[in-house]
Length: 177
Image 1 (cartoon, rainbow, N blue to C red):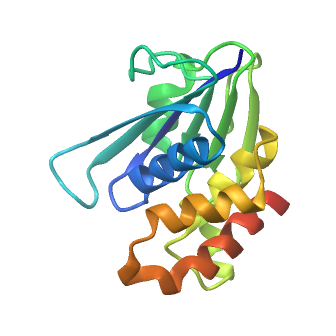
Image 2: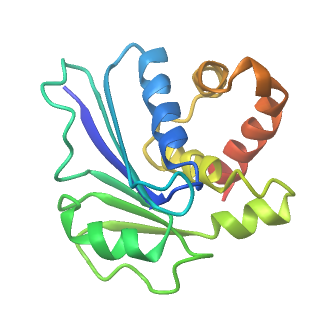
């Protein structure tokens, strides 16, 4: 029996909810039980945003993630707020382009990914979140190109399907970092 509880956190406009939805669809594509619970402040851009995702081999009883196994922090306030909530032995992924401090805890595995810089360097400035998801999937052993592409096809609207290849490339940048 396997269950992973994820918490994505950052500012509105960083693709936090999209990242969580992508991970949830990937779980569905893999035949898992999934919960996706978005949360955001009153502002669409610039306010706080977080997203809880649970992916499990068994039914999910509650969508609430109070003790995430995996934290993805896209800004310093998110790392400050949620670092101590991560389960012992869990993982913390943080955007080191925007967060200058290191993870303080020693009982978790920490990954500093300069996602915003990598996105800018690859001329995909809006895809730092996807780079982070690629790294998360690699480190959790869940990176599978077929299910990643299937999940991306579900979450990218028909209007923006031209972004599919850029998202796949961003995912691979994260995987290979």
